Image 1 (tube, one colour):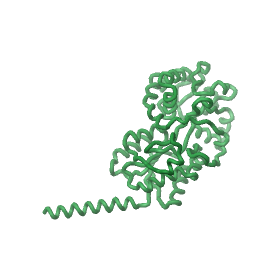
Image 2: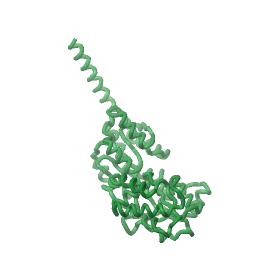
Image 3: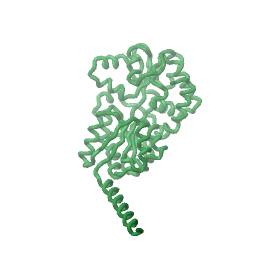
Image 4: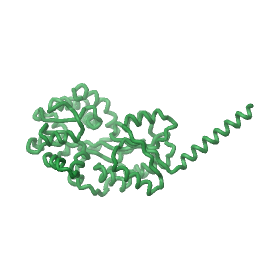
Length: 341
């Protein structure tokens, strides 16, 4: 009886080892992605052509994907997580889902302030000030701090303070100036609202163009989309607004990221590393820029995006991306106390 049990145990162990070996050798990378951009299809197809590794993708909202990975545990098929916003990547780290990655290529190509031990930024989106031409003097909104100035009373439109884009901006203000100054800024911004926060970044841009408000914050890739649009109404919108790169004489314009990392339980670790390294290649970096209007993280990449070229160069804040996650919870508390909802 004991011999039979031993034989059964050995057979199961060998079967498990064979399955694990087969999975490791399979030329596939299982991607869990919160990037909902159809233009990324070309990115994955090119990777497959170059490496022979098939990209199998599951898309979902950030929180849903993180919960799914945690529930799947050691049996998760996920190799790589891609998402937007540094704070969301930090949550994956805090949940213990990501594996430390050592790659000389990634360390050489991605600046130190745009990576951590277990996740990497692959593209940037800058948060700029949009103003109504003829209604607001751009010299009065040169810095984020200007948005709290009483002279803008009743002129500012915004999306929710609980959105990651605004939380990350406030986190950067906390990192640079401290909590007290950050709360003073948040209360000043709330006092200047033209209406209660609602909608997304594109809605804020359209509201400024329509005269509903004089200024707003928006991520650059929303502006670039409108600039590249063939729709007459989008062109009219862009004709009526101006763009300011904030804090150019200070710490620089706040940037957030789209990035990713390898899961601790990844069954295809070699393929996952190749995929992450591919995302830092010139080709992939150009795709982020030309396909989805995001800025590359790798210096010197030549772009073919007329909208980004028109927006021009700018001084970006080099605050380490990990700091945005560090102060995210405090940012939410400050927004809540300030009535920025």
